[in-house]
Image (cartoon, rainbow over all chains, first blue to last red):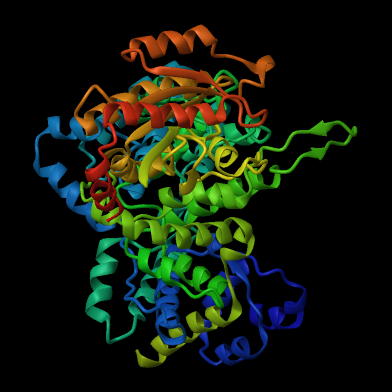
Length: 451
Length: 187
């Protein structure tokens, strides 16, 4: 039995996600096992390795803990991940004419809700792969036409399965599955989100259904809505980081770490606007050494600043700035658990990069003993610049600056301190510790009992 | 005692804080910390022999993320030092927008202002020529222009004294009403 195997060797395990998943399954099978978990296992899992379903649970548990154990002095709610807004937008799009759709696609990256940016990026990737295919084999053209025809009628924006279904369809057309085709298929499967693989796997979805059935009774109606809203999978969500942010970070990682005053020094407004437009049109932008690091840095800041809901969300604004210094780390950790998956992934990516920048702040010597000039951007400096971009209450376009600004000045010290702490400790921020996990496990167990 | 409100504006890293601290405290700050907002005061007794002048300096960062505060400072400021770094073209280009914004907020062409090319000790790294600065200043209805260095203490005091002089010229001290006026400002 799996369970007993684990029992024996659990001290040598690093708790990677698959084990966690197996564990979860076994809990599901035998509630008694829960005791054993509660008493002995010290789990420390990264949030990013959790599945959609686990993340939703985590949000709930974190919220409960925050309210129970910490006096935050303010109301907190779980931030919406834009799913609802997206839904309504989708509905609107469906009902409205096609021009509206075109208009909406005007901006693909900037000033768009983060979850929508992710969807756009995914679509972009699919489109790109399609084009690649188109180029590679001529005899696939007909099947592709068929595909694209289908796509336009497909109302689902995040049609990750459509690309998969296409690959399972196409081999039937060819008389013999040629080698390049199969290679293409496997490459593709790796390229798309992990989520869509669940759709193929029946056993997974059955488990999923079962788990969703075991939701707590008290919030059953709410849960029902949720399940119909989004299909929660047990597989880890693929890394939801917007393309713009990812390519900016990669570029700066490569060319900008030694630049004095990176993110602080001004940029060319014209070139930044051009880059922004390119990304907004969904063009395939490749950032390389021709691009000035300051322009790319400005683009990154602009992307964060123009998000309709800031990365750390409006809902959590007060919680972040009023948190107590004493248990700052724990509270920040819990608050991060509350963030929608795409925000959390993006934040992790950003913080990881920023801490790398901060690590190059001081002058140093390379392996050959040559002096390397530091970029002078310590975590405090970076927090000063990024703080207001990550955490703000109102839209920058709002006019009440005169009233707001005085209040915001006081907040800004708190914002900077929180963001600095995040940069300094980012490595341990995105892990769920055993006690919290226990809560999660407990919750599930209770559900089983109550069912 | 009359109070002058001077605002120092410019892109990030051009040396606004360095200039101000050099003027107020006579030291060159080596640290490289971005300022969001800072205010300094200096009494200048020797400047105009009879009167004791209080200069209140505000440093405002041009970083885009702090735009909300910028308008407010422009409204309250009396004289403006627009600073760029002679080692970075973009910091120079940014100032045109900034000037336009000031004129818009003030709703007049006649605003005490000085264009400052800082870091002139870094001659090796110069990107913005002196003539470029002068030309720019000429276009700005003959605005004052100086190249300065906070590090080598070149033209630092001159920037602020020139602004005070411009303000004096624009609004001459009226012995009786001056006091009242300053009270208002303080409030």
